[in-house]
Image 1: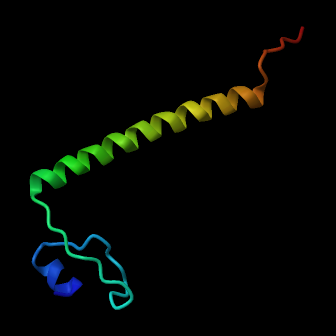
Image 2: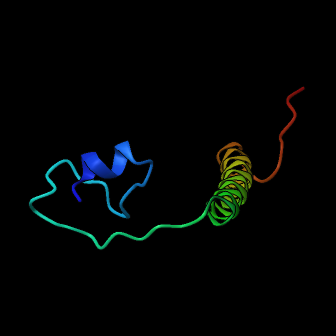
Length: 73
């Protein structure tokens, strides 16, 4: 079964490539519950990475402004 047939049958190959002749991944089908659980894991991981990115941005801003604030009179 080629990628187009898989798509039309609502089954997606593991590795969706533009040139399917170059590499043909074995077809692996998963049920909806498994896919939703995997999607939730991915969503949680993205949220964790976003939180780390925000924290690093705050640290970088703090570093760029200096570790102490200087007041001028």
